Image (spheres, rainbow, N blue to C red):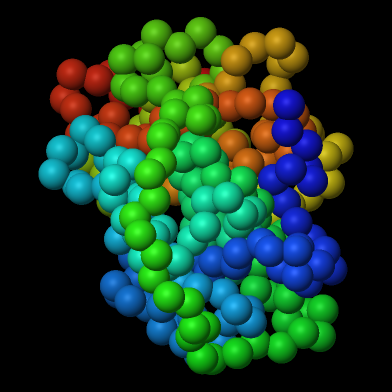
Length: 277
């Protein structure tokens, strides 16, 4: 069973973790931005020693099948090649960070744990580091690319569409309320939500400083019945990982539906619900 300390690392604990051998990855990314924008922000200033991990190139697989969603999972070979090119050592722990509201570090946390790596998210991301009075650097660190990593996936639970349709538990939709209710749909083929899903918007899963709320506040946000299995989805499998992380910090193991609404709504045979469950 995970705890908060298993999935998050506070800013004040990061220097000691790096001194002990942890590897630092910058995963800045925002939905809808121009390709390369996150890397551009990385070059303008990043935590010392951080290497840039590209969410679209490394943490997302081919988008040839719409029912797999807009950000399908990479296979083990693609992920291993991308991490190996960054010189990641799978025997050492990893810390990932982003900017609050981007959801990218949560996605990186999920994908890397799914592939068996020991990884935590920097609580509060880059702004928390800056607020602590510590500096940034603009040079890319000297790190020789390594060989592709030999990874195995499946170390975290996930569901496909058929398993979601048959799921007998609490299915959480973390998109904004208007998209959940089907009043607007700016991206995906159909508006609405998966029948039976409850809405817990991901925007609530940070406090004003971009930190994960304390356990009692998280429990209130989630309002989950005890003893029932939990699964989570979003628009394309990125922001949902933040809520899986929040649940893990409370000791609750939740399954991710990676294709999420973008995959479900692309299949005309899948039913759609609107309004509030």
